[in-house]
Image (cartoon, rainbow, N blue to C red; front, side, top):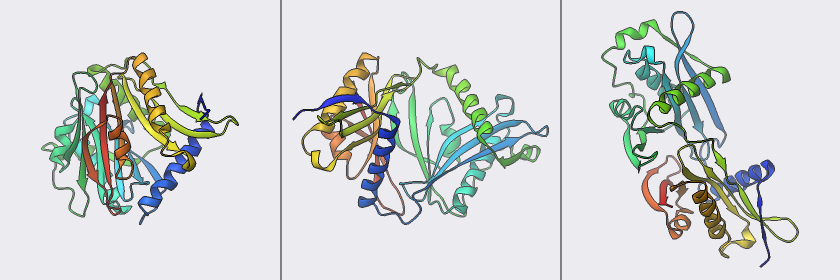
Length: 294
């Protein structure tokens, strides 16, 4: 079979995302909207400064879940109950939107103990990611009685207010979190994109992979798709090996990805090991976290 490797265009990436979403719906019909809603929640002090915040991703193809993608508190205001206030308010919003579970990932130098106090449990751990550190994937069932834990300094919360933020607030939150992370695990470089596709003699895409090397030398696989008529021919495995080869040349030492019931076997066949899994509601399918040493 004749084919050629080329770089993905932005249109190719959109096409892959659309087709994989369609494929997911075949295996896991949604009871909730598939549209993902992002909400920025900010905390202000008496002067109106943004001194903390969280970024929530609600819904999506995993169904009724909240992903707490970022949580940050200005160093001047830590240990005053502000982080707990943001967690509780994030969960309240998620429950209002019909979310049944909250998920997040946190590094060992961020806030795993705080989340545990709020009822989150660990379902997957990436050891030595970044090097000498660990990433914890955590989840919590949401219901009407989530605000059980209150910080011992929660009396100071009356000095702060939470509001819905905007893109500028999201940038403040992301920048503050990065500055904190850089104290413990500085970025080694910018993200290196390794997005590739196989095309036939007419230039038509046969298979594609959205991947790259992150700032801590982890090779991530964000998305993969093989056209129906080319499945079972090893094209996906070939693309994955090509990405692994180039990632190693760029200094990557670990491959990381996630998969569902219907495609986890592909990654395991290609040498990835399961580091944990979570069962989403209401769809009932499991999402697996996977890793492979390169």
